[in-house]
Length: 624
Image (tube, rainbow, N blue to C red):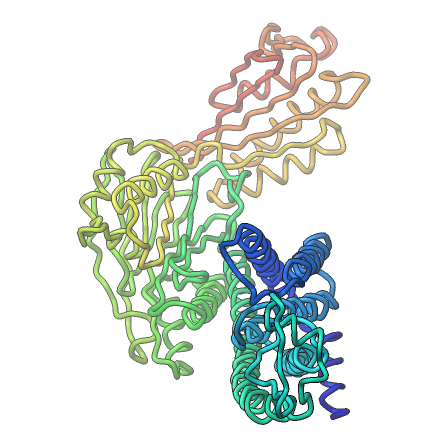
């Protein structure tokens, strides 16, 4: 018994969040039941007063119904006031309900045991076996007390089946009811015999039946509690999985380059990419990175499978390809071969990945590519996108020692490349129709000269309009690349000071060396840089210091380098002055002008303009 009481105390005080939420809702449910019961009691009272319902001649019926009505309403009001958020509310309402049901039963014309079962059934809603057992015990005590008071003390209902009169006793009604006559002359009743008859014939059978019902209700409450714990465990498991998937999704997203514009300082190209996984995490990935100053790698891939395993395999594949290519390999076929060797050596899950890999020389537009079982790329040349049906190698991770072959694409200024995973072409609508490559090319060719970001946006919009409400079954990954050529290849923003002349010279020389510029031409360009940037430093912002921009562009046919000097200083056209007369002696010539003259003579073209508040001076020198 003490253990049972401790169990009740434990459940009254300690509950999990899920059980507490259930208890609050159970309190509110019981409060509503109390209000319904009080309403029925009030309706019974009105019906009794109107003569529509009788209670065996009891004069106490009205008082009992009113009292029960008040108790039920007050208990329900207290619960609603506290919004069901007090732990003692369940005990208060169950006790009040038990007493109210016992009172109401005492005025009925016949014994209604089912009425006392209502509080017991209601206690199940708390899913606590001790609470249900506690309610059952209270009901037995209250019910027994009510019946005892009705028979032995004459309060409330008196069922004459349990009354034994003395032998030879006579009852003189004198116009009174039989019940009232017995009340006024209790000496004629053998109460002891009546109580024994009641206890053996009625109370014990009723008690036995009630115990059986109580056991069933207690077991139901226990199973309900176990179900709540199971549901809570499942919810926690689901939440944990959701958290892990969200974390994995964030890790996967952060592993992919997702800041655009990706290389704002590089003007030779524009690039954009997106990945929309079908689940929380996907098996597709894209990548792009500078292998060195002049080579850009483009990768798009699709791992077999979905979910966490595919995401892990995807991350491993991405890292391998990136590491192999950035450590000196400029050969896509060789990169795929080495990646395949590493994956097949440890690929116990038998997963594989399709890969398209391209490496572009930004100075020439020459792109070397290899395809390991991936989708055909879409290439725009001559203002038209077409499907480039390149030769496929075996998927990476399929067979050890697989070989791959390179092919080349000569990109010209304005050419674009669009690569994707099978989730694009295989996007399916409600009629099981595929989006297909024909629709893809149609969308791309509607406006082939737009930026890569708008290009991908148009394709995604077209896919969404095609599939409508059909679910997405596969990851949708796209990468678009536009080659702008070598114009505006490099740009340097720096303060216009004499001390920065060597920095500007080194910046330009670095570009010239990559173009195999002859030493004589490079020296002439260096002299021009020294003269022009020094003039900007001395005079453009004097006596202050201001910014300057130096741009290096490369032209072809014939190859030439164009260097642009831009400052926001006072307007000044160095070409407006007359050239000095170099036929005169040093003493006879005017000071100044010789440096600009030398630049004009050594460069193939020199031009100046003042535009938008900027001095813009360009020099051009062919590289022979």
